[in-house]
Image (tube, rainbow, N blue to C red; front, side):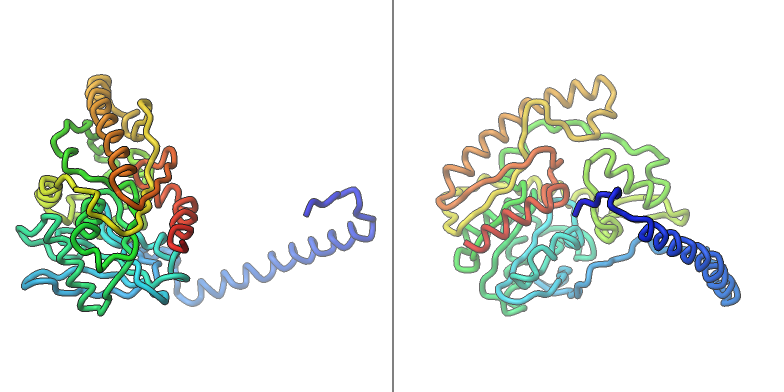
Length: 347
């Protein structure tokens, strides 16, 4: 409601002035009293803060999928059919700590941290799409979930492909969040990365600021804390996951026969143009920018082919694209993704 301040009469102005004086008086008397009481209590106000706090109201289970391998399963609650969230490469299920609540009024939502990451087991082998999906179906069996809707981000697109083509009876619907068939992608030259400065690694807060500055999205604190380790000085020192794990997952990606997927499919993708760049591109030196541009030309063509395949080869699919999502469409375009997914789930 728009207020026209010229309509206030003198009486109203006087009342506002009296309220102002009363508020000022209360602040000067009551607040110092409370501060004094706080000081007398022995609380100094300089207690260290746990930056790895987890504000998401979920339960955490660890479920054994084969001897020596247990996976972290987050349960955000909800009622009805199950909805399973699968992460991108390098992430753990806490990356969905906010997004999961977009659906708990409609579904019972869980998320799985795949083997090799976060608090899940990190065996030397077992990183093919087939075995990763077998982990998931084992978890569903143990939780007595015969059928579910799956939402997967990035590298989880390959897992959705495998689930959709080999476990049709376990799938209600599939949602791809900028997730692709990476079978060909692994053979292509990739853009150069950007090294973090020592100041970026000095603390969790400085590191998260750098991640946003360079990658363009902010993950929940708990997701970051389950991805990296710190030294005794509080400096980021390494990733929790051995680097060869990601390499094994990427190398295991296969080209999918999309025609085998019979479940309804929604794909939510970032719009690419020839000028699209990740934020860290602007911090690269001239030589690395040139290298990035050459790789981007190749990746742009690859992505165009993948989009055509996705739209034409999957029998029952539709796609939506959003600009400048920096790959994490469900974080940077949360409201838009939630709207499109909820509409799709209701169909």
